[in-house]
Length: 340
Image (cartoon, rainbow, N blue to C red; front, top):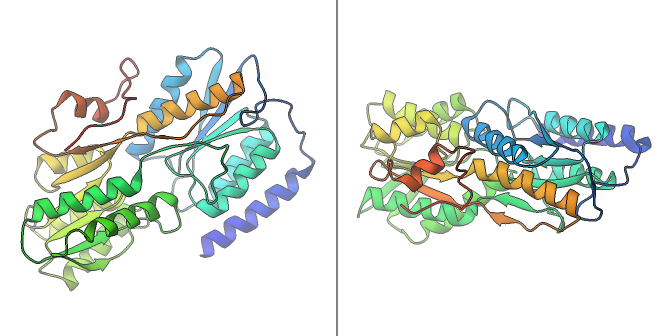
């Protein structure tokens, strides 16, 4: 709550400072055509994570296939730094970029940044995480998090088998669209599996060390825990390390999210049973292409589900799975993912 209040105060300040900014004549959300070079700012929730690095690669790949399109990539270092993201995005608006392609760290706070961009005729595309409310003319290229997290509950149930089982859930950042959707989907999925008893729920705060600590606490309080679902990369890695240190790898089944190299390694080692793998490359790729279409052609761009792939040790080497795990600009994985 304190971080959100600080972000709102910072947003009010930058909006007030920007009231005298020059309003540009083109580059709006599907309202006017623009010829010539296009400058886009692509801003993740945070830099330094494999997931967002794949978004960057997709965005730069799309720009390389367009004419006179440049991408500026920057972000805060923690997904909880809402104030920092607000300031960064507002700076790009003030600089006069043609479009923002960004993932919102806080759905309600960042809605005001989107409004500020639109008032200055800066095109906006959301990737991974949108805002609350989501303007109808601002598309979102993202995972169907509710459906994918519902499937995560099925994967956990399948890995645990029959009988009463105790499980834990590690969300990552309440207040973000993605976290709240994954929570909704996972708990909806659990309704189909009454044998799974949710005995603990603690947030990793999108931080590896916090994920490690909360999992250690959960294991201390629940020594007979059977399974864990962790809903993003830092939480997954923290949970996996806690299970390793407890000597319970393979005994406690972990269903994770995303596909950082250490997560893939843990799947091959049997520490993680399965991963719900998004298509971050496609998010960046489609986000940039959508912005260029809106700016150059003046067309309204529609939102799209960028798909998921369910990765296990058994299907790890399938060509379709590998195209998502190791994307390339020569053969971009832009058609969605496969099955378990």
